[in-house]
Image (cartoon, rainbow, N blue to C red; front, side, top):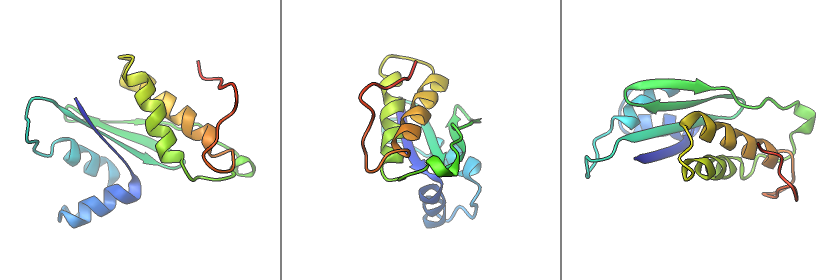
Length: 129
């Protein structure tokens, strides 16, 4: 399997550059997941984050949306590193062969932790279960 990660701005820019004439993130994720591949042997899964809006995952011709962990504005400190943290959390479950839902949940958890701190730092003892 191959995975493509991005945020909504990156997805819309990709769509515009390729002349797809849509700014709908779900449509874009689906098109990216169906984009021709050189190998042709693995399917592609597209994962698009959207800040406080749901994470969009396109796989096997279908789009799923997953809610993020909502955070009160007063707890938001710094969004730098949120996307990288999401991908790290996602991959931490993927390498353990967990389902996509669990991978997205871990990604959301990691991003949520990062945005509550200054810089890309993490607590001494994470509480993800």
